Length: 575
Image 1 (cartoon, one colour):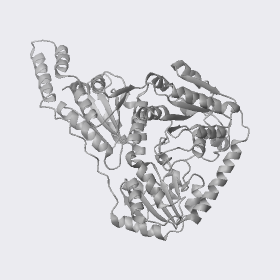
Image 2: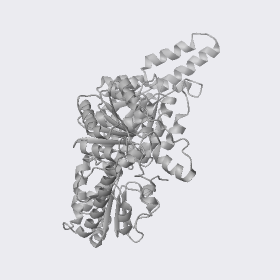
Image 3: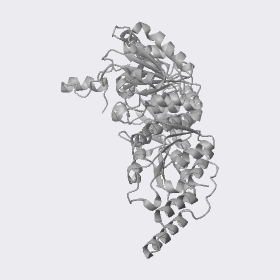
Image 4: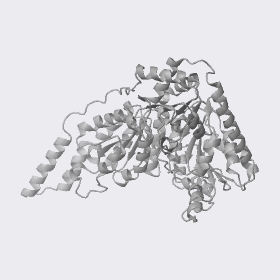
């Protein structure tokens, strides 16, 4: 088999359904062979969005998402998305084209040292030099992406390994000519010897994929955690994205959190884990709760800037951290009890062992719930205030009301999306996608594309800031071509508001933060989707309903919502 066929065989064996790409001659054999084996080739308008889409598939399915890009600028265009996946612990497999093996370093088209660029951004990377090593390298890439702390991996596939041997030999022979001089004969001998080595030996058949080993917490650690939980008066549980590293266990994890009975805050991919209105789930005043708690459990949560580097946690509180990464578990704030392993499994095992009586911490939960309710009342009052053209808080409240039980939310932006995170409630486990700790703008279209394709029956809502929308507006063409009926809502206030608010106050200048309230919906109209403008608050419900109807009919939608500027998130900028 040709190299492209071998790669496709491995992907098929691994259960890959989608390959995200932007075409290029270096990778054409992979794309054609994958399509022949029933995989869907989804071509985007920028390589970074191919990796973002693969990232979303990995988060929602647990199967590593796959992107294939051409050599040189095709690979360099993915670097931000690779780093985002690395920091978010997403298992993504990136296949990159490469210059011909015999011409590497000789000035071939798009020939650069790709490995030195990609290696720091991946947990494993390899360049392949012989055909017989290609399939094993791709197999190993899948294993590495899922093992231990998940993350992105990279395989460099030189173009002369992907086409069939006779075609490759003809390329080189035609280039060498038929001269009879000693130099010509020596060159032919050298090239033929290289090709003989390159294509030597039979290609091994791809084995069946083995389930990745998941590190579980030792019983001794669990017993200590149970003992501490039994003594706690004000326990608090924080669940983050890494606890959802095994999406197939999301329901079991939600059940375990409910049985523990500990007040809980959810972040990242864990948003929506308990549904919209679970009595244990709190949404506001987390900082205050952490300062009062006497036991804090961090399940897949890191003490980074999001927890003020651990300073939000009461210094006298007993801290339990469950994390696959030993390093991240100890970052900035060392736990009293470290449970190295899968955070989701830790909570399931803890719930099975703890057997706490129902309502054990009802008084503590009641006081937290009262504060939550008071904050919700404040937000409601702010949402009712006139802030023309459209109050962003009221818009978010309308989106929350319109979001169906099968809705998936994709968050891409600063101020508007940050506001939405306080108001819009993800309805189910695995129904919220945000970039993660890298804080990357531009993930929206790729994430929404991946989510819509692997969950075709879901209603995918892409919440955009107007600044963030500019990163990936061209992908609305991709939505139309691939029939991905995403509903995008742009909160358009004509500014990079999250930055402008602090910059103006501290530096007395809005330089670089000014935008226009541009007709973003006209872009969608030009690409052939449904284009809606919202500049009258009284029309909000009708416009959102029309958007849902269009998406239900299979058309992607963009709602360009002109919003007023608000001080709702003043002081929220993170460093």
